[in-house]
Image 1: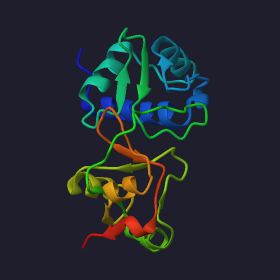
Image 2: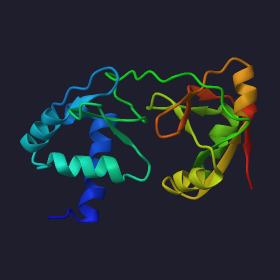
Image 3: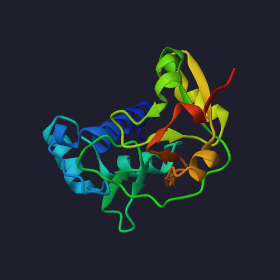
Image 4: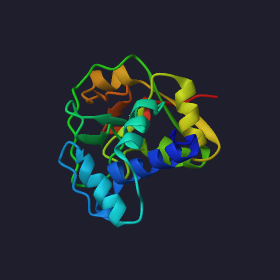
Length: 185
């Protein structure tokens, strides 16, 4: 039997919540790299009223258009690729030299603070940046009226900032000082 797309979307949101932010909400343990045992995820979810099957998890990992999740090589563990706010997760990513510019999507209501203080990770471990304006716009729409910021990533890097590239090609950095940000019209 095929799982309906709406059910897969709901499972993807649930996995994002559990694997990125609140594993303890269901009593799940993540290691420092964010890995969770799939059998434990299924068991903990079931104990908290959410029945999920391994096959559904595998479909979500395979079909998620943002490639938010990864399975371990042996297929026994799952993790969110990036976006963690859980204090137990301290993912390491390979350091990379960024392209000249990257983009960040946000809502217009945050602009005053960003222009004054720059971009900060907030509750997440990193600021997320994208390679293209369309992705940044889509991200900004999730938070309200979107605005896209152009980040002078290579210039930041040359000034000592570290950049990391996640498996799903989201660029990560600790913060973006205001002087490296330009608001696109």
